[in-house]
Image 1 (tube, rainbow, N blue to C red):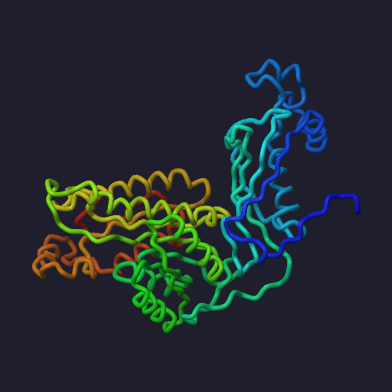
Image 2 (cartoon, rainbow, N blue to C red):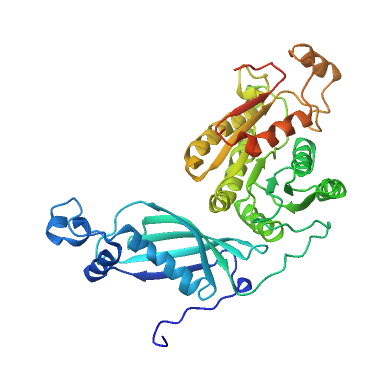
Length: 412
């Protein structure tokens, strides 16, 4: 056994998010025949040179699972090596690899869970011209030692394992105030450990956390400008290390808006809303999607608005455009990520009394209530309860759905 290659012995603490591990090689005809003998797959495309020469490929194609063995090599020998226990791997094959074609396998650490000593790896195989030929996500347990849960944050929140624990983890963006804060409180009451994201309002975010903790829940505040992909990646890493991997994401962050006619709007006004409603949502969804996929599924809920249905109010063209773009992105994600058991749904509230609307004259609220079939306007609790429903298992067979919380103003 001493003549065998020696595996690395990295511990959990030795591995950092963002680290990249690579291995290069090509598979010979002898390698392919040896794999065919072990696997029983003697397809002529792989092992018969004469047959392969007459195909569109011109020569034998390497078995896809033989290519995937490079991921096993990376995990078992490099990251972490000796202490690895493979927990899962998904694969997507983009194009065939030919016998003797040089390739490069790459594993990038995208998340770590202190609670479960597990890693999430983005795995790729690239051709000599740097095209992706195989891609996927791996989940690996590091068995270097039995670890205690990570220290609780300064708020006094209890750290909860992402697997085997009593609580799931939910990330709520823009949760320091208004609708986002109510969503965070509602999810905490329903048993989630909540990551309370904020941008500038640290004191208000901590107040939301204290309220949740005082009520017996679990919450920790995490600062990040969700419009910045690097900050979102760093925040997600901190959440995984503190609470565990999020399997619920609620995108409720929103910028300031003003009522202005289209003739007075500049493109910068549209960009400001698109940064929150499209760019920020893309950042957060891309950050948590690998974690949800590795966990076997998850739920994303994006906050839209009544303005995406029917005739929108005037003076909000920049806001309406951004929310409508988010509707399209949400549907696209729902369709594409369904195979990963990641559900993407939407909630579109009508006029709601929050800090963003508190400057409205009281007659506006009264007029809106009068034209609503249920004769009142929405409350943050109405919206939060709908979000919690879409995040939970009771809506397990719903994706791509936009729920209008409008008291009957919008009926579809």
